[in-house]
Structures are given as structure tokens and as C-alpha cells.
Amino acid sequence: MIQQEPGYHHPLLPNLLFDLSRQKQRQLLSTFWLIALTLIGYELFGVQTNSPLSNIGAALITASALLPGYLWCSGQAQGMPIFPFFALTYIWTYALPLVINHPKVLTYTPENQWFAALTTSGFLLLGTWVWFRFVKDPAPLPPIYRALDERKGDGFFLAMLLIAVAFNVATNGGWLPLSRGILSTIRNAVLGLTALSSFVLAYRTGTQELPKRQSRLFLVLLIAYMITNASRLLLIGASSTFLISTIAFVIGRKKVPVLPILFMLICISLLHYGKAEMRNKYWVDEAMPRLQPWDYPAWYREWVEYSVEYLTKPDDEYSASKDKEPFLVRSSVIQMLLLAQNKSPAIVPYLYGKTYAILPQVVIPRVLNPDKIRTTEGTHILSVHYGLQTYEQTFTTSISWGLLAESYGNFGVFGCAGLAVVLGWLYGKVTRWSLNAPILSAQSLFSVVIMTFALQTEWTAGVYVAALYQTSAVLGGIVIVLMRSYSTVHLPAMAYRK
Image (cartoon, rainbow, N blue to C red; front, side, top):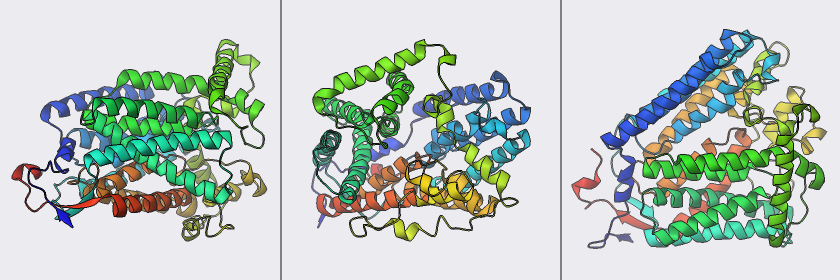
């Protein structure tokens, strides 16, 4: 039943906050140019490399990655900035590793690095062109859409965050006697709901529409989730949740929360340096011992002590362990593109779509097919094909590749171009679909899911598609059960985009 109640505050109106005023545009553009000039200046003149080609290549990638952000900050691109934030990830995964003396990148010649930089930059520019065609013009209002009521939506997402914290505590403590397949399905659903909840509540906190009491509760639950999630000695989940929350807050407030970002970066960096010692002590076959709620203070105290010990000891007392590498070295994936370009097609043939052929199989829930292939199977196919691992080794260790290196391994530069078109189309289409929909609508929540996945720099297509399928199924249930339909036919003229 379509609802259009007299005097009802139509949930479409808050989404007009995505439209930037001239003052906000100037502020965002000032911040943008400061960051852009600092990064490019550092890459060109702030570091010394084996060849100027590396510096120029890093600057070229950074400029290409910043272009979508400029289009959004200047008001030329509309809607949720999915592609701009996706492009930004290529600065620390592809650009900066060229100028920080990355040990694996240094094994390739400056000419190899330059070709990788051109490939990456071309990929970003083509993707930007495709995406921009969808978001440069206003979109018409949908005649009908489904959305959560604001009050009910806030309560629902706060409850989901509370459930996510409880799930982390229960799994860490070994309280859930479930099969691996069922536990994996629940975990994926919880991850999707956590991403949605964090984004929506952080956005509404940024717009100051969320009541203060609920904003404080959201902050407490967010911190609790990151603490309980990171306690398994894997920082990626907590980092991703904080990143998506920060992006949502910035979109809502049109202001960068510098101090919280710096504080979080310090905390994550500190824990990163003690992570190796904790894993060596407690992990058995990458499985952590049971951790009860009352064990958390002692657990983190020991973790911090290992971090401080690492930072205060001379470098020569530590071996070159992967777990002790700096963040930019750990996050880099350009070395995988360099590997694929160096070996294919002269030494190792292209895969010709082998990692994409498994996509129909990875979307089947493990509950229905206990013998289904791993969602990371595409990643392992690449590692075995390029001689990095044997197939048996993939059961204990996974090597990150990312979408761009995977596309080159399958079809070379044509694969990279195809990926640019697909992602530009997907992120542009989803953005345009949610342009005139409120943040609690089906369209906007789906765009939040896509933005969350766009920030995952290490995924291959199989992981991406499997996660998208599972999270979309959860979101579909929310749309059917909890949302109601609204009509935009009688909205006042102010609700329309100009």
C-alpha cells in the first residue's frame, strides 16, 4: 500500500544533503587540492627512487585516482561517491608502493613499473569516463520507492550493531555449536548488516538527524564492535568498519573528522606491530583460542606490550617478517600486476577467464552445497598459475591479488579495459539509481553495500560476487519485511533536484 500521510516528513527530503552548497564545495575543494598537491609533490620530489619513471608513474596513478573525487567535490558529479572512494584506494595500493622502496616492486625494472602505472592510470581514467556519464546530470524522481521509517530504521540498525557485537563475543568465546557452513553463512550476513548499520548511523550522525542519545549509543556499539572483531588478531574488519563509518560521516557532515581519524590510525598502527608476536604465541593453524569477555583487557594489554617492545627495540633484532611490514607494504597489490605483466603472455599464458568461470558456483550457499568450492578459489587459481603456491599451500595461506591484477592475468590489457567498463557502469548505475532516494531506501542501502565492497582492495571477482550475493539477499529480506512504499507524485517542488 502506498503511503503519503498529510503532514508527514517525507523521507526523501534528507537525501538532498548530498547536494553541496557553494560554501561546502569551496571547503571540500580546498581540502582536496591540499591533499592532491601534497601527495603528488611527495611522489615527485619527496622521495628518491631508482628511476624518475617510478616517481612519475606514482604521480600519474594518484592524479587519475583523484580525478573522480575532484568531479564530486566540485559538484559536477552527483550522488553517493562510490567510484571516487573506489579510485582513492589505488593511491595506497598502486601509486605509493612505487616510491616507498617496496621490496617486491624493486625486483622489477623501471620500465616494468612504468607500464604498470600506465595500465593502472588508463584503467582509472576509462572507468571514470564511464561512471561520469551516469552521474553528471540530474535524475528524475522515482514515482514509488520503498524505505524504512526514520525512527524504526534507527532502532533497527542499532539493534543490528548490538547483534554484531554479541555475535563476535559468542564466536570468540566458542558459545555457538554450529557447523562451519552455517556459521560462515551467519557471519557473512552479520558483516553485511554491520556495514549497512555503520554507514547509515554514521551518516545520520553527520547530518545531526540522529538524536544525541542514539548517536552516543552508536559510538559505543561501533567501538565495541571494532574491539571484539579485532581481538581475533585480524585488523581488516575493524579497519573497514571504521573507514566506511568515516566516509558516511564525511558525506553527511561535509567535514573531515581529523582527530578521530588520527587517533584510529595510531591505534591500528600500534596493534599492527604487535600482531605477529600474538599470532606466533596463540594461533594454531590460524585458529585463535577461546576468548571470554573478561579476558579482553588482559588480551589487549599483552598485545600493546608486544607492540611497544617491537617499537623500542633496534630494527636489526627483528627478522624481515611479513607481519612486521609497514602498512603501505602490506596493503600494496601493484606487485601482483607487475608479476602478471612480466610473465604473461611470454612465459605464462593468460587464463582466458578461468577465474571468472567459477562465479556461478560461488553464489550457492554452503548450507545447500557443503562441497562447494571456496569463494577464494579464483585467488588460488591465480597464485598456482603464476607459480607462487602449490594448490595444497592455498589451504593454509592466501595471497592477495585484487580485481585489476586478476583481469590482466585473464585477458591482459583488454581485461583491464573490460574491468574498467564493468565497474564504471556498475558504480555509475547504482549511484544514479539512488540519486533521488532517501538514505533509508532500498536504492541507497544497496549503494551503501556497493560502496563497502568498492573499498575491498584485495578481493578477486569470486569473493566480490559471493559477498554481494549474500549481502543482497539479506538486504532483500529487509526491503520486503521492514520497508514500506512511498509515492513521490505529490511532493512539493523543493524536493526535486535542480
